[in-house]
Image (cartoon, rainbow, N blue to C red; front, side):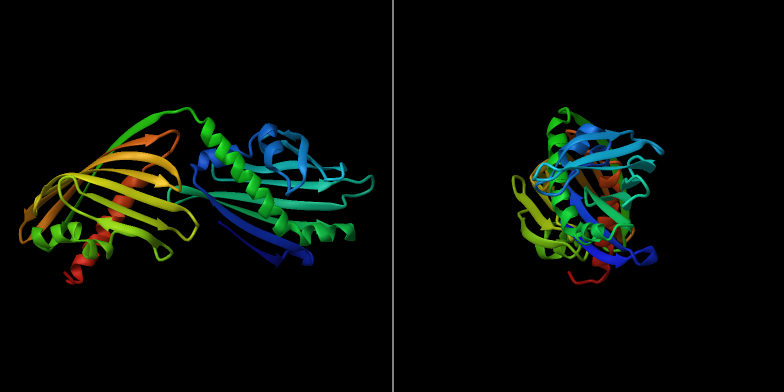
Length: 316
C-alpha cells in the first residue's frame, strides 16, 4: 500500500514523499538497495529499464544509474550516497550532468521502519531544477515512484524466495496480575465477544474474519488488514482447556500469504489474593529469514495490558 503527496521544497522546487509497506523483514528490504545487481532490476519507472548501474553502498560511495527509455535513449543519473545506516535509513544525491552545470539534481532519503511484522519504507525526494525541461520529470515523480516501487516489490519477493530455508527458535514468559477472579479472566480469554474487545490491532485494523471455538480440538482464527495494507492471520488450535486454570494451544502467523512462525503457547491462571495471576509462556519457531527481534514478546505484553483494561470496564 502506498501514499504520496507533493509539497514545495526549498527555493520553491517541488518535492515528494511516498511510502509503501512490504511483508518482509527490514534488513531484507534494505538489502534491495545495496548493489548494482539489485538496482538494475527495479530502479526505473514502468517501461524503462536499467542496463547499467554503479553502486558503492557507503557514505561517499558512487550511485550511478543508466535509465533506458522505450525508444532506446539512455540517460545517466550520477551522484553519491550521503547516508547509509543499515537497516534504518539511507540518503543519496544524484543529478543529470552537463558540461557547464547539472540540469537536474534530486536529493533522496529513504527510511525503513518495522510495522505490524513487515517493513514500511518511506522515500522523500526534493529537486533542484536548472533546466526547465526537467520540471516535467519532477511533476511526474509521484507516478514514476509508484511504478518503480511495483518493481521494487517484485525484487523484495524474489529476495524472500531466495532466502535460505531456516528455522530460528525463541521463547519468552510474560506475567500480569489482574484484580478480577480467575473465572472473569478466563471468560475474557475464551468468549469470542469478550476477547474481541482486546485481541485486535490498532485503530486502523479491519477485521476480515474472526472465529473461535475454545475446546480441545477447537480452532480460533483472526484475520485482518492493517492501515498499511498488510494482512495478518492468526490461526490456532487448542490442545488443552481446563476451565479457569489453563489453556494450551498452537498457532501459525501469516503476513499476507507468507507463513512467518509456528508457536506453542500456554496460559496459566492462578489465584492472587482476590485477583488472578496470568502467566503466558510461548515457544516460537520463526521461519525462513523472518526476524522477530523481540516483537512477539512485546506485542504479547501489549495485548495483556489491553486485556486488563478490558476487564476493568466490567462488561463481562
